[in-house]
Structure formats: C-alpha cells, structure tokens
Length: 157
Image 1 (tube, rainbow, N blue to C red):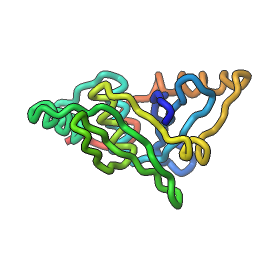
Image 2 (cartoon, rainbow, N blue to C red; image 1 turned 180 degrees about the vertical axis):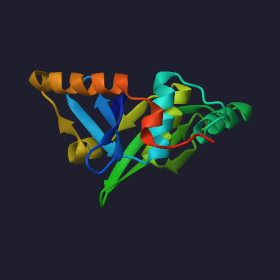
Image 3 (cartoon, one colour; image 1 turned 135 degrees about the vertical axis):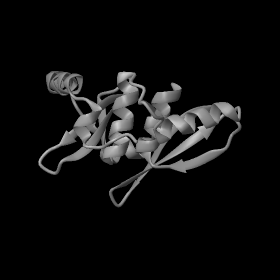
C-alpha cells in the first residue's frame, strides 16, 4: 500500500464528469478517479474547510463515528475491476467496510484519516508524471484554487 494525498477535484470536459486526483506520497504517480457530483462537492467542501448550513452525508457519518466511539484509521483504495474502483474503510477495532472511493475519500478528509492505494491499482491506473511535467500539475492546482463546490451543479440540502 502506498500513501496518497488528495490533490483536488475538477470537472473533466467535454463529458462534464467530476474527477478526484490523488498523488502518491514520495512517488511520481497520480491516480485519477471519476466520481459523482455530490461526492465532488463533499470532497471540495472538506478541502476548502467549508461547513455547509446542513450536514452532508459524510459530515453525518463522521459525527456518528464520534458518537459511538469508533475511529477510522485508514482508507484503502484496493481494487480496479472493469473500470470501477473499490475501497475499504478500516476501523481501529479491526473491522473493514467496503465503500466507494469517493465516499471514503470525503470521509477521510473530514476525519484526518490517511488514504492508501494498493500497488495493483497504482500500477493499473496510476499516471507517472516526471518532475519536468510538474508544471502541468501546478496548472491543475491553480485551477483547483479557483473552483468552488457550487461549480459541480449540486445543492446541499
């Protein structure tokens, strides 16, 4: 397993499909995962430190974990089958729960939980970006600084 950082979310054109981009800590691979607009909003809110007027599902899940005394210790992106990514939530009690990566990432950002990607997933879907192409990633980061959760066309009711 390799630790991953969340670079951010954006809308892929022309399909208008949101994407979350993860970066391998201590490596040169990036992992793009296409996600839904609700999850894109949840991830963007968490990254920007925004608190919605009403809790989103991931905020509620975090509050429930705290209320029942459970600690999320890590999120693992474990598999990629037929174009679909799979993840697991790993709790301090040893319990593991299957989850969509987008939900797992949104929850991890809210709880400060590390995110890991399996070697197989990074080998299959990771994109190596050498240092000389880092300026393209910097352009992506600049784009992320200018985007807001409202750009994903969802409401948080």
